[in-house]
Length: 494
Image (cartoon, rainbow, N blue to C red):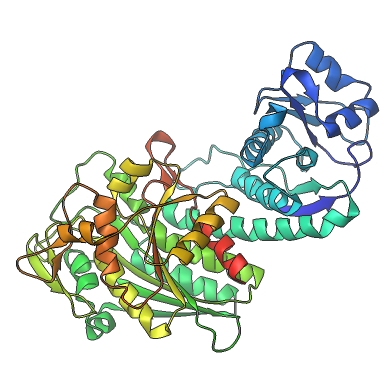
C-alpha cells in the first residue's frame, strides 16, 4: 500500500474515491459540504431522501460523480460531540469495506479534518495507516480455492487542511505503516496452523528478519545449549514432544553505545495441549495462538527496524510445544530453573510461566534497562478483563505508567493489575521453593507473582494478552496486539 498526504481540498483533489463524512441528523461534515458544492448537491439530496442518516459506520457510495473524483464514499460519523478517535477508526474502516466492493484503486480521506478532542494530525494519520493495513490484511491461504479476493486499493491519501500539518501527517503515516508491518508479521505467524508454525519456523522467521534488516542480529540456541545453561523449567515443558525447542535471541543496536537495552521476552508455545494436564477438546485448536507473545516480539522488531528507531532492543523468545507423552513432565514433578530456584509443577497446563522464567533469567546477561514479557498466559485474565484490555503487572510504577500511556495513545489499552505478597502466598509448596500454580482465585495475579520471583533487581513488566491477542470462534484470527502498544512505548523512549 502506498500512503501519501493530500494537501488539496475535496473539490480539487483528483482521486478515484473521495471519503467524506456526515454527522447524525444529516449534518454534512466540513469536507462533505465543500465537495457537495462541486458535485451539484448530490450528497445533500441523498441525505434529504433518507439514504444516509449519519449513523456511525453507515456508508453510501456515489458513482459517476462529475468532478475531480470518480466516486464519493459518504460515511456516517455519528453524533458530532461524540466523534473521537475510536469513532474515526470505525468510520474509516466502514468506508474502506464499502470501497473494497468497487474497482477503486486509490482513495483520499478527509475524515481527519473533522474536529476531535482526543487526536491531532499525527495521531489520526498513524491510525489511518493502521486501519487501511487492517482492511488489506488477508489470512495466509491454505484453502484450495482462495475465495477472498485482495482489495484493489493500492494508494491511500490522508488529507490535511494546512501546509504546516504535512510533516506531522507524513510522520504519522510512516509510523502507522511500520506498526502495521509489525502487526502483519505477528498475525501471519499466529494465524498459521501449528504444523506449519513450529519452534523451528519461528526461528527461521527471526533469521529472515535479520536478513531484511542489517541492524538485527539473531542467535538460535538448541536444546543442548539450553541444557548447558541449566534451563530446567523451559526444557520441562518441551519434554513430551518430538518437535525440538528453540531459544531465539534477537538484538537491535541503534541507540547510543553503552546504553542499556529494553528486553522483550515473548512466550512461544506453538501449540499447547496442556500436557499431561490435558485441556478439554473444545476450542483446543485455538492453542496455536499460544505463541502470540513471541509473534508480537518479532513484529515489534520489524516495526522498530523499519523506522530505524535510535534504541537498543533485545528479544528473547523461548519456543516449544507442550505435548503429552511417556516423556512428558507429570504433575508433582520438581524442576530446577536457570536461576537455581526449584518449582513443583502441580499443573502442566501452567507452562507459559515455566518457559518465561528461564527466558527472563537469560535476559539478565544483557543488563537491560527494563524487561517486558508478553504472553497469552492465563484464562483468568480473560475472565477478569474480557477481550478489550491486556493485563499489565509490574514491579515498577514508572514503567507501568509508561506502558499504560502507550496503550492509550496506540488504541491498544492495558489495565494495571496488582501483585503482592498476599497472592504469592498461594504458591507455597511443601516440596520445592514454590509451585507453578496457586489455585483458581486470582489466577492471573498468582501467575504474575510467579514470574516476579525471577525479577529481583530488574525493572520488569508483564503483559497478559490471553484475551487480546486473538479473536475466538468462527471468526478466529490473530489481532496483532500488543505490537502497537510496544512500538508506541519504544517510539516515546526514543
